[in-house]
Image 1 (cartoon, one colour):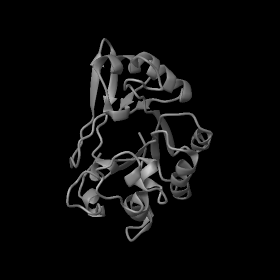
Image 2 (spheres, one colour):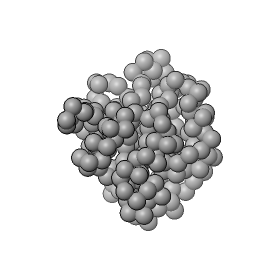
Image 3 (cartoon, one colour):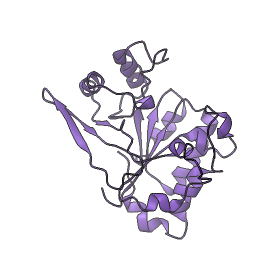
Image 4 (cartoon, helix red, strand yellow):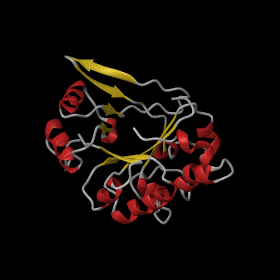
Length: 221
């Protein structure tokens, strides 16, 4: 996986305006991405039109979840929205052996509910039981993780370029340049870049490095 860049997005119930904003940045350059879905929207049909996009599920197992009262109901609810999904990342990264087993039984082949901040090399591994297996794929960069870093006013592209394996996670609501992320959910966020996707991804693809140099290394799960 060295030198590969994987873009993922946790939708987190973002509205269509915000999701459209993200799609408009990815589609013109055919940038592969995996979207972990929390809710139904007409834009899922748009995403399905492009073979460089993938839809996964983003099940919310927290108490009071709108997805369901138990982990089986939650997974079933999400798969009803995205029946073709083979990948999953749990909201809040909540996971357990029982959840993994049920996801395997329902056809999920990849789980990305492991966050390893700034890990330069990431190794995938299989969770196997009773003849079933699921590939566990950690990721090593996330937008809101950087909001908690004291004394840092802005992330740097070099922070990502130094990683051999680059599996990035964005939340569309933070990408959207007109949205004040400091008012979104966390009062202790100390900084919000004006536009993450432009600065880290879109600028990386279309800037001095030239898109064709790295485009072939981009893929989704």
